[in-house]
Length: 125
Image 1 (cartoon, rainbow, N blue to C red):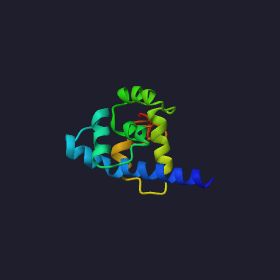
Image 2: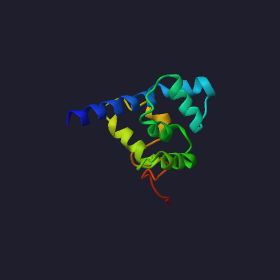
Image 3: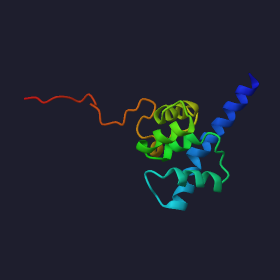
Image 4: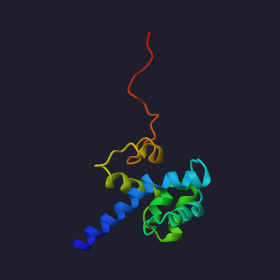
């Protein structure tokens, strides 16, 4: 029980670093970009001594969705990129979610990217 607690804490700390620190490292090394390559993310993790034990979470955040699924399969990850992002949102519900805006999109937990009907309404005479 204690080991599960400690493992969860380690994972949450790593994820926190992926969300809060890794974006600025990637931008400084490679310039501002919507997505980075697997090699760029791996290099930034190594260069800045950020735990790579949970690197599948980092890849799901910063590598393009088209590429990330193949990476996750190769790494033996059982969850999809979307599922990993949902775990990250759940793990940090108690934290300010403002850092998630640029990383997760509008609503990563549900996959809703916004743009739906706001309930406003129809035409009329």
